[in-house]
Length: 220
Image (tube, rainbow, N blue to C red; front, side):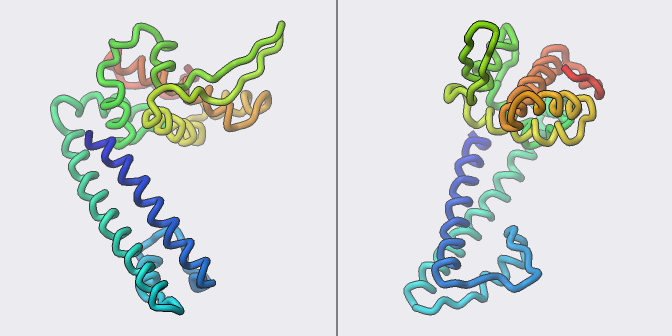
């Protein structure tokens, strides 16, 4: 439940950030040159000094900024609780196993573990992929197969996490990067990354079922 609450919280944070950006755009206010707008501490400090042209705009802007700070504080608190949970006997070893796989960190490990629950629930990789929604819709005609978009079915939180991990893994694991580039020569990168995510899920299934760390350098 902690991980799902965090996911919902992140959506609220993004909505709040979008509202702040919209107000800045509406009043033609731009950040000073050289100041990163990636929601750093310096950027937030600058936002706190922004003055809108009209009182109504200033009220709406300050309300959004106050809400954002509250949401970020809640996220920090949740992350601390999740870290503590990751160190408990139930999760600590499996987290270490998953973190041996390139592209997977402690937070994504906890999302994977809590969403999958028990890996033995899935008799095959295909069933696990179906649960996550990583099986692409396909339309075949003779010898030609057109790979469509990701299926809308499946666990959306787990699917999103695995796609993000796949992008990180593709940039940090030479063997996986090689296969990803080969796939990109045949299809768009947003579809090739789905195949990478499936390979990542295969690694996840392997280490959790066998209780051994991943050996780097393997493609599958």
